[in-house]
Length: 171
Image (tube, one colour):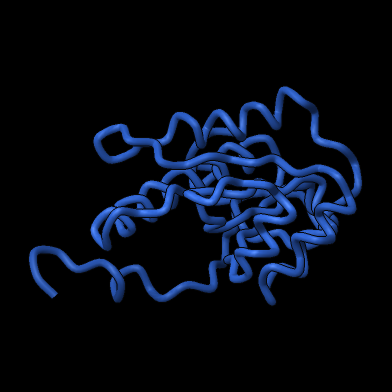
């Protein structure tokens, strides 16, 4: 798939086909995040790939909107360093957003769906994933082939009109 087509085809997929993802495809998705831009190239992120079904089921407990995680083939958990101050927290969150979208586009390019989730329960997250005390569990994305229909460019978007969103020069 071309990059533009992958961007147009990407959608939140919350129901997954059980077929496995090839190791080289999962590696490509993770590498997309690893290659993502980071302010001053700080890369304050770590990614934990989870494929164990019991662990995926446990991850659903860290946020009420994570009900799709147990059905995923894999879930990528985003871990960030505890920030020194509010400015670094904001910068790190922005960087992680870039890594997330890079992974989502790489997955869509391979016909693999994704859906994001926030994280609330840090104690449960730390128990499940074992990350150090100087880190926190920021987000996660479920990954897997869509159960309902394959990814393809979406023609009729449910979006605000382009001209209502894009302003040139001023509001």
